[in-house]
Image (cartoon, rainbow, N blue to C red):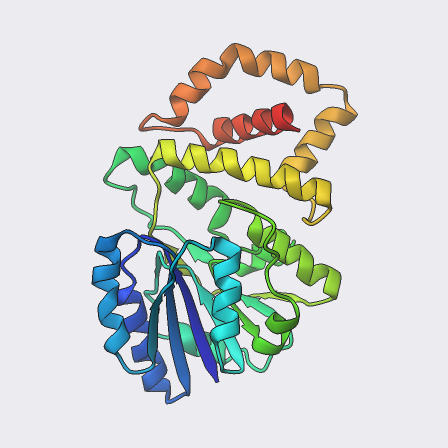
Length: 292
């Protein structure tokens, strides 16, 4: 019936795994939960190690870090049920009917994306505000809104796919580090004619990064984006659309000049306790232009 696949990297996934196992048991379905550790620190391995002794849970520590795409492919190859449910290790499942909602949408021939949520309350640590505000603004969308652009609004944190489809269409493994491997996969599905269905069955994103680390990851993601654009392996992103608009009206040079004038204040704002998502998006555009 269902293989639940969780890539783990420096996260305590015990609560997540136990919650999912409990839901599956109550539904009386055949299931397995695979938690593959991708080179975590020892303290996380020690905590998650107890999962290896639980019924229907397979906890495996990989000898080396594979990366975000490769580990998902490895999980998919190791699963043995008809449907694969991929969940990030920093996911929080609060809905007691989370598994049931996915089951109610079966059988399916395409991918089902459940969505992502963030806590409505601001993080207690102000140095995590940027990631939280960005997620609330750009990632936490209802299914109705996501359906307007189903491939562009796909994220790889919480989705179900038939094993037969994933076997034929795994993640590409030519992107390293953080960023845009989900949209690259959406492009693979789109070109193969596989539909992405959006439902309201979100998980909470609990792994907020501190501002400086989130900014560094964003820099890496921009590099990945440009690489994928050159390879023609990604749908047209909002960033590219904005860039094309500026280019069409001949405003690239003016934008760079104006941004450079305000850049010190913008970058100071990004690491403050009250960061602006608008300024952060302009910074991303500037970085994109500089690297393109």
